[in-house]
Length: 204
Image (spheres, rainbow, N blue to C red):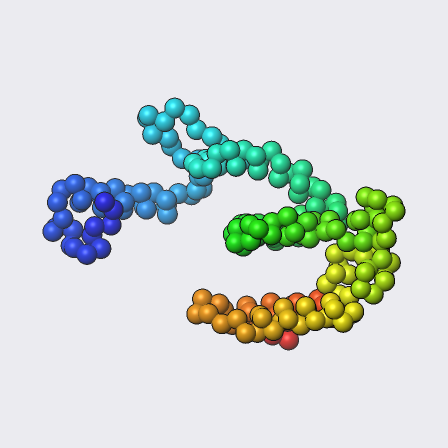
C-alpha cells in the first residue's frame, strides 16, 4: 500500500512500508533529476514484450493505440488539406479534450462526427451524392446549404433553436463550471451565429 507516511511518521511504519516510502522517494528523485525525461519505461523481468510507438511506451489500450498510430497521420493530413490548416493550427487542437467530451454523447456520435468533418447531410452533400436531390437550404432556399450555413441561416426556425441553445448555456450553473469559460463559450457561439469577428485579445 503506497503513501502510508501520509497519516503516520516514517518511524511509526513497519519495515515494508518504510521501504516502500524510500522507493517512492527515489523514483520521484529520478524523474525530477533526469536531464532528458524518457517516455520509454524499463519493463519488468517477467514482461514478455513491450509496445513502443513514437518513442513512447504503450501500457494500456494497445489495440486502440496501434489503430491510432496507423490512421491518425493520414487523417491529420486530410484535415489540413480540407480545412487549409497549417501544422500550428493542427497542434493547437486538444484531441484528448474532444475525446473526453464526445464520450458523453454516444447516441449522437454519428451526427457530431459528420458535422465536425463537414459532411453533415446538408443540401450540398445530398446533392453531391444524388444530383436529383435539391441543394438549397430547406428553410431559406439559399443555394448549396453547407455546415456553416446550418449555424448562420437567418430563417426564423433556425434562429429559434440557436436562441434556445444560448439560453441553456446562460442558465447552466454548477460548482465545477468556470463562469469565465462559460461566458467565452456563449460569446463565441453568439458571434458565430451572427457571423461577427472574434474579439480582439488586447481588449481583455
